[in-house]
Image 1 (cartoon, helix red, strand yellow):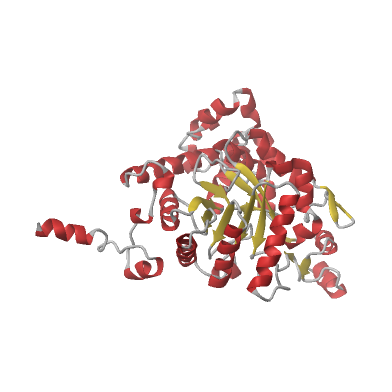
Image 2 (spheres, helix red, strand yellow):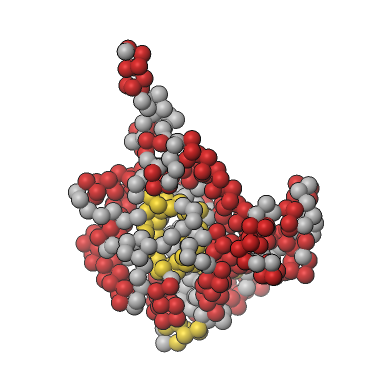
Amino acid sequence: GHKVKTKSRLPMMTGALGSTFIAAKYWDSFAIGGALVGIPIVVGENVVGVDKESEIKKGRISKAPELDRRIDTYFRYQDKFGGIIVQLNVEDTRNGVAEYVAGKYGDKCIVELKWGQGAKDIGGEIQVSSLEYALFLKNRGYIVDPDPSSPEVKKAFEKGSIRAFARHSRLGGTNLGTVDLVREDFMKTVDYLRSLGFKRISLKTGSYGMEELAMAIKFASEANLDLLTIDGSGGGTGMSPWNMMQSWGVPSINLHAKAYEYGALLAAQGGRVVDMSFAGGFALEDSIFKGIALGAPFVKLICMGRALMIPGFLGSNIEGVLRPERKDAVNGNWDKLPASVAAMGATAEEIFASYFDVEKRVGKNEMKNIPYGAIAMYTMADKLACGLQQLMAGARKFRVDRITRNDIFAGNRETARETGITHMTDAKDESAKKILMA
């Protein structure tokens, strides 16, 4: 953060969990788990736009029950750690999401601008199998492919040759042809968000090229933003695997190496460099350590998408078996525990190593309201924390902000060249030779 700091128990945050059905179905697991762990969670784009129960009058939101549910669920279990980030894309901005959140929640939420990945080149962000819902989305202003209002498409849908519709968002900044125009528009937007009362603002950018990366770092730093999340390719959404996101854009390692380089250039000029979060393929504690080291001292968090969602799914499947009356509510998919899980036990207390840690946090009576997906996410976070501590101990670094680029080395010459990280046989080679020659 810049002026208002956001504390996180672990140096990680969730990816954006937006309008995909996966995010909606398993939100309680993700939000409650994230709140109990004490890490920031991101409400992704288009949540209001796809909500049939939301009301938009005269182009502005007047009612947004799904967005409210997502925010309130996290706040219910949040302590002094973590934070909830509400993301804005083109449609969200048009619909007045920022104004709605500011009016209802004040500065308790962090608002996030989004560059890129809103309009995916191949396929939509969500896929719907209902003609009625596809028409609803089109009427909400989204691009729906194929066009559900077309008589030919309706006939094809009735006959079964068309079975689903893809919903797309619009590209942002298409009317801005120069760097100066992008900067002017960005600064105006940030000023407007601050005028609404937001004290914390972040920017999320995708795997664009170097010019766009430089703009993101420069403008976010100049605007005194609190966080810049840089998401490398490949990637995906709730409909992964995603062809466009696997074959389009700059891979994470290259993008993140340049982010450090550009941040260092700004710092060398005496300017403030925005706090960064790296995203794109992070899953385990070793990749968290490497990401923080690669981007040190600018990187404060690692953004993780599917890696943190998986325990939510797993816990929900387990809960559906052990508490069959809750199977539909938690969207469980199993009828019985697989042998690999059954070998660990037949109750939640036996299966989840962190069950009693969560119970201590919320109390015995409240445990009945905690989804097993949240307990699984808490357990996963505990595992990542322990692994990260072990790696840090090995590097003799006992605080995350003490990790530097010298704590990792490159495994091959190409990586060394692309990242600027010393090759493993060059690391302290001169010192080694001095020992031999002494």
